[in-house]
Length: 124
Image (tube, rainbow, N blue to C red; front, top):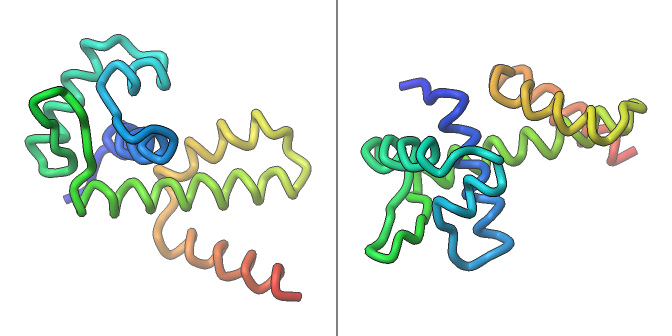
């Protein structure tokens, strides 16, 4: 099943926030993304129902193994693509915004080709 772009974005955000803080709550995600808490609550319910996150009794959110897998993929794509764009001379803010859009639509094959090319160039 193909996961929706918005779900990928939420999972990546939870992943990034969990690296900064031990605990992640819906309010943290809403604040980070500048979304309404009600919108985030609906998204968290959907992610929980599809097995990507767990929410404990205190409202703390953790990624499941499947959620971590998706989040790490998006984070790797975002990081590599934004770094590549910056190296090509794109302004950092624009590179980050563009990478955020590209990371959700690029095929695994194309991303792996870019990653291989970058890694080969770095070894030289």
